[in-house]
Length: 413
Image 1 (cartoon, rainbow, N blue to C red):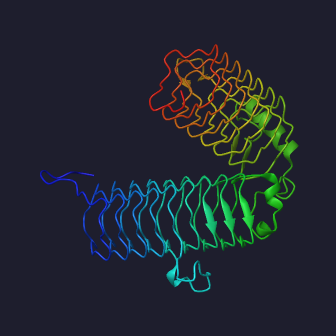
Image 2: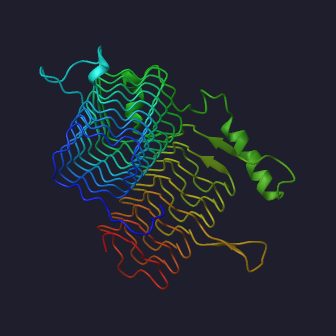
């Protein structure tokens, strides 16, 4: 955002602005904290970085408004319309987006008064603990949004996009989510009650195994097992080993994605440079496996055993390794062809909550934005590790080597 010389930030906090017409206005960084904007017209307005903390936007029109990085915490959007609005990286924690009538909450059969989020663009927005009761969010884009603990009560989410969104602990009660896109989303500890997910795409989602058999997901597209996909895993592994041993002259590289292979037993296997993106490898046994340069982007490795595994130069970005056993694993850099060039491991945005990394080598690894809460890093080598914006609440660091660590923006230390 480019500021123009002169003027000052609009201070409109704690005012009664019901029915005000600010359509198409440029109100970057304006402060509406605690104000009443019931029936306000803000469609097509530019409200980047604006503050609506605890504001009342009941029945307000925000169609096509730009709310990039706006502070919407605790705001009330009952009956509001945000069709086509841009909420990228906005903070919507504890907000209320619901249909309100004199008789209370009405049903979805007549959504005219519902909070209208149709076509809204909320990429990367923070909806943590928000209540999206009876909202109309058809074709809304929540890609990459933080939606931990969100409560969807009888919301219409048909064809909505939740790709790579974090929906941990979310509640879906009486929702319509047919044809919704949940690819790569985190759906652990979610509650599904009386929902329709027919045709929803859950490929590559991080999801509790037991939930896959839930009646609401019976007609959804779910990750396939090797048998369902008609794959001969032993033959593929043999082909990959040959590919590695012959320096790609023979055999074939192992490339799998979006499949479900829980409790897999691949201890000691040769998986160097394999592509295993968005795989469900829950509780897999990969003890001592050779996995240098492996690509596990977005994969589910919760409770997996990676003890003493060779993960030099591996890509673990956005992977989920909660409660994984990685004691003695080598996640340091890989030297290429005997030269001075090294490929560092990548764990940007990965989740290691409760994982055991005692004595592991993580030197030079990029763990920016990683979730390392309650992780055991005792005696681990973190020399030169990048931990920018990482969460380290409850982490054990006794005896860890922390020389040259980038701790900018770290939380929990």
